Image (cartoon, rainbow, N blue to C red; front, side, top):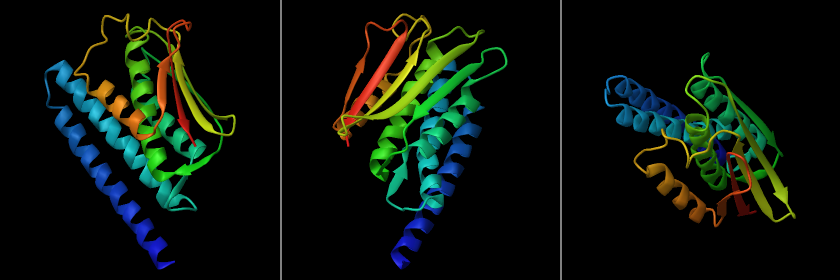
Amino acid sequence: MRLESLLLEANHRVANSLQLVSTLVHMHTSTVVDPIARMAMQDTQQRIQAIAQLHRILCNGDSVDTVATRDYLTALVAKLREIWSTPIAPRVLTLTCEQIKISSWQALSLGVTANELISNACKYAYPLTGPGEIRISLAVECQAHLVMSVEEHGCGLRNHPRCHGTGLGTQMLRTLVQSLKATLFYDSMHHGVRAVLSEPL
């Protein structure tokens, strides 16, 4: 029990520290003039928030080393909806998710991966002044693989004139997929972009 209490306290402190870092990044972002640099700072803040959200779930959950996927992704999607949806460009984010217990490390990699894919869809799939829907799903297939898909019906990442950046997001996705021993592919038959991540349980 003492070890569990110490781990809960550690997660609480990490969550608070990450929130402080996120606030500092947000404050610094407001002083950045260059739009590409500003976007990179905003992306960094969202990645920090995705990690902080995991530690909040661990603080409030019934286990210090496992995470319920629906609880975690519901909170993460709600935060991304708050960030990306505006009155002139509403973003409808819908989540269909099975409740599965996974390790905290797996949840962390899954959450940061979801953050990258969803944020890309919110930024690039639809016009700057128009609505758009992003659908996220997570399920177990064949009792052996956890499969997450993120899809939209816009013009897609590759065809959008605003789709540019430092390439850090792509590098992060590649590293996360490798750490999960997973595969990530894009459905070429889908109108828009449909990214599918499959990882062993």
